[in-house]
Image (cartoon, rainbow, N blue to C red):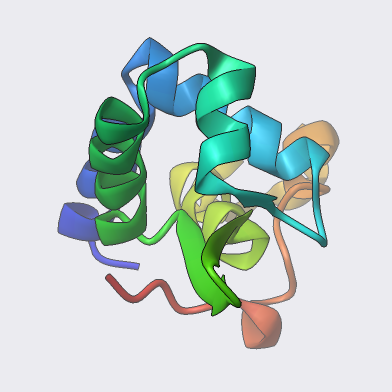
Length: 117
């Protein structure tokens, strides 16, 4: 992951409504939620919710797909894992055995997901 992509993702989550949306979508994995359901659950007008969802999507943190007349949003857990791995990549100077709880968050190098915006 590049620093610019990490900054984009962290900036998207650094706002209370968007953080709440992301956490809500994580709770509803793997089915996701329709945009209207998200807006109702978070108590935000639908047009405002659309803007928040667009920011999260550009940051690579949520995915959407059309199902009939609804757009279903899902958290991109692989992208989030990639972000957290990027944040702890150099933990303990490369000696993972010294920081086992953090090292447990890191996926094997070959299994990292690539974030695309």
